[in-house]
Image 1 (cartoon, rainbow, N blue to C red):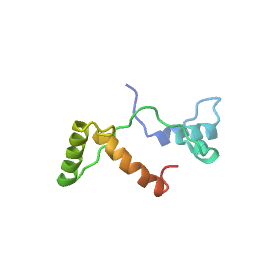
Image 2: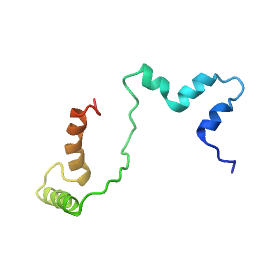
Image 3: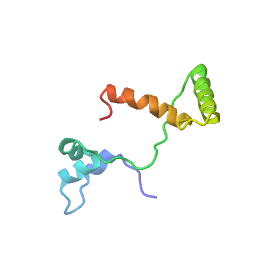
Image 4: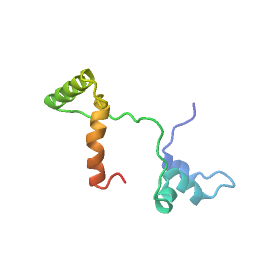
Length: 96
């Protein structure tokens, strides 16, 4: 295994024939942020870990189980959290 170095150190060691500015833009994704409003969206689900108070976690679990037993379309904890979180993120300007 090769020696580990910080990514920023690698930017100073430009391979022959590579434009340093283009390499920096690729690594930092500066160019994508500046030139395009539509970013590439990841495919699939991204795991996120949060810590909830016991009463909130219990209520979420209970809501999930009760909704599943009653045949609701949205019943998983993930679906419930997404359904509630997405409108809030939109209203705060974090999602378009």
